[in-house]
Image (cartoon, rainbow, N blue to C red; front, side, top):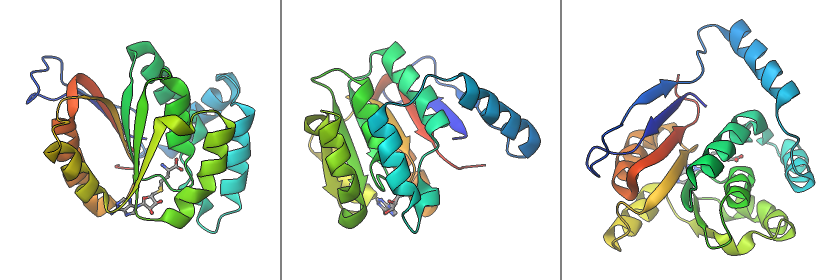
Length: 193
Ligand SMILES: C[S@@+](CC[C@H](N)C(=O)[O-])C[C@H]1O[C@@H](n2cnc3c(N)ncnc32)[C@H](O)[C@@H]1O
């Protein structure tokens, strides 16, 4: 995870800003920080551990969102009282699971991916965690799903968006995200250094 941006000028937010969270030009410092976080963060829930382990066996298991980075974001979701989230790039469902665990019972995660097969790996874990009712999985290119959400009048209503999919699509996802987020909402973007 590299940048976190807040809100949208279009939605009237006054406090838009960018935090550079990780400087990949100095990997030794980054590795030190990751080691510190791994040692001092709260433990993962057993269901998160299990899904992470299953994902590691996947031929593209390296795509799994880093549990340490994900945990920072889940804390932000809890502190900010987020209810409505968008997960762009589901893979085996680890990030969607983490957001769903961090929002209230009536919250929702709209989870977007093109691979039904990979996303289906996560479904039993969503169920085991008791959060499957919060996750609305949509299998289609994310730009199409995001545009449909805007067209159906959901602009300015989301609290949080996590972008972790095809890099070519990031500009589009970001721009559509700015329209879908409420003022003060958060967009977190993975791997953009
Ligand atoms: C790095 S993985 C996501 C990892 C996931 N966030 C996690 O928690 O482990 C990237 C995902 O983006 C998906 N993807 C690629 N192109 C896409 C597109 N155009 N629209 C939606 N998802 C896409 C891939 O199928 C893949 O599952």
